[in-house]
Image 1 (cartoon, rainbow, N blue to C red):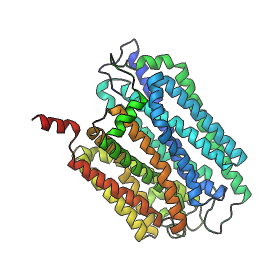
Image 2 (tube, rainbow, N blue to C red; image 1 turned 30 degrees about the vertical axis):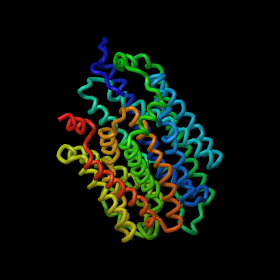
Image 3 (cartoon, one colour; image 1 turned 90 degrees about the vertical axis):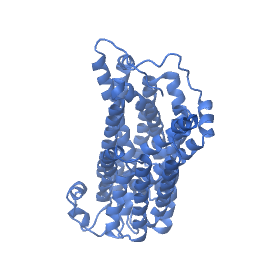
Image 4 (cartoon, rainbow, N blue to C red; image 1 turned 30 degrees about the horizontal axis):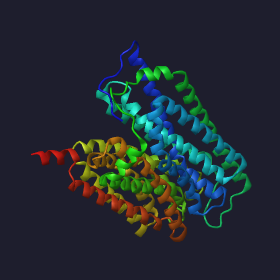
Length: 457
């Protein structure tokens, strides 16, 4: 989406744009929070419905497969109806998804959980395609990067809070170790927690829908008009252009691998930390000041599944901190070098978990989040610079590749069923190794503009 060179001027324009931006930023928080609830939910449904790891990972698959199906249609929807109507459609879809989740919790039907998650993610996909450029456009164009970064910061806050609240609501008394039995009382309590979480999420989304509906004309007034003569993108032309570009396809593969590895580690994390081979019989995490406080020891020796679920917040919190550190480093170090370094370290951390294991492996696994931090935006921008296709076409394909969050966690779930939670991280290690190769290849390939300039000279 091409950003305009100036915004509309109208009485109260600045306050209108500020109110619209605040509402859009709440959207960023909401979808970050909803997405990170998947981590404790995977652990909860494994116990509630007595599932294998692979079957429990279908929750992540049902959520992230929506990106593969809905990204290009979302772009076409926004091209036809523009941002605010598309946001209203997305929010209505998400309310429907929450209602299905409420039905799933009350009827205790796992397929309904999968349907509800797919509907929620379909709405979030539309929100992501619509809200990113909208956040950038609402105000002075010179501060667009600041606004988008600020909105994404709130998204990171949502991903940090989600596992803490989700673990508190979903995992009270739930155990999934071999031989453990989930009593009917614990099962009812966990289902009630899921019901409560998605009830309040439904209320938040409904309130956002009402705000955007009431203020749709005000928000539209704050959004700058499209450039004169701008043509609407044809979805099939965009897809053809993206698939014709070698670097667009390489970037899509990289996004597929990155999202798949990040989600697979996050959704397995609570089960991994709770295992007896890691923290299940250790009190070591409670000696770490902030981590121990957040986990909140129940006084029983070892780390319960609920306590482990709360620790997952630090995996996502590492990504939040890493974005701040990465922003500083990117001003001093080339993006390709930083991406190669971070992916190599993440690969090494995964291999440590696979080969060494033990109590220290729990801390090492949480640290992977710190190095995930800069991967998505750096892969995205490196690809845009080298693809040669229009940004809209490349972005559509890259967003579609987020479907890696559906495929790789399911494969990791199968590996953990066969080999154990620690050994299953060999697949994310392979993903990070391939991402390191992508970074090195990008370092050897100049951006399209630079290559064109070199040819001219």
